[in-house]
Length: 304
Image 1 (cartoon, rainbow, N blue to C red):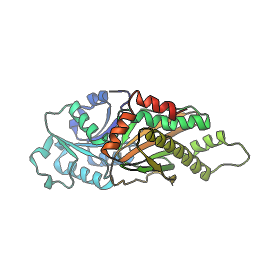
Image 2 (image 1 turned 180 degrees about the horizontal axis):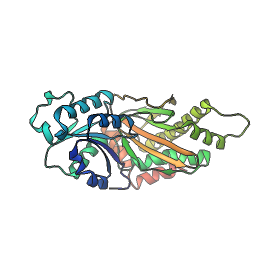
Image 3 (image 1 turned 135 degrees about the vertical axis):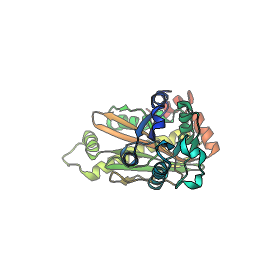
Image 4 (image 1 turned 60 degrees about the horizontal axis):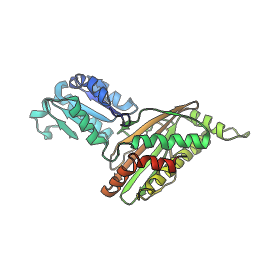
């Protein structure tokens, strides 16, 4: 696994993936196995970051088809891969929903991982994950004098709010659109606020939301500046606060998000970057912008 690559989290329904789990782990994909329908659907609703659903027919066509249909109904942006099994001899019309990809035997971890990359990383260049970590990490360091340690970046295809304060800043331009999300527990944001703001006022929920919006806005501004250096022009919107966990966004284009947790003395901040739409010309320019040594040139200008 390349250290700069984001990590996949695969929710697997069926025993076929048990055999490939260790090899997929080495390639950069964590596998959460489930061997019954109720457990699989429960995990689908509770796992913090899910990249892809992988199903195999060894659990029975009806049961696997039911999991697939429920997944598509609840989380339409979550891609599903069917591996081997009963689907090989059955028409797709027999199933309640259609998987995004079908992989036939013989299977290997490399083949499954390559299909995950194809389905999930289309709009992202190789070092986009590193850019995400630096966008928010540098804002926290520069503006609030706090250090943070970023986690491994994960790919999340279910756009579910996982903290009680979530702030979204959208960006849009010719051939490109997307958003940055910054979220944290209210207590974490208030610790940062008290560090940055002196006075007798006791901060509350409103101050926590304003701070999350400010961090997201500053990060989006850095992203816009980096894009501008390579001719990808976009504008950023105003912060939008989603004030509770469990809310699921349903983006029309359905691209996955890159997600990272930034841990520090103040607690943990979550950052997400989603590129919903990216034209061919913009994609080529961003690919050039986010590779060495061009990425370092942007960093020297954009990150102080």
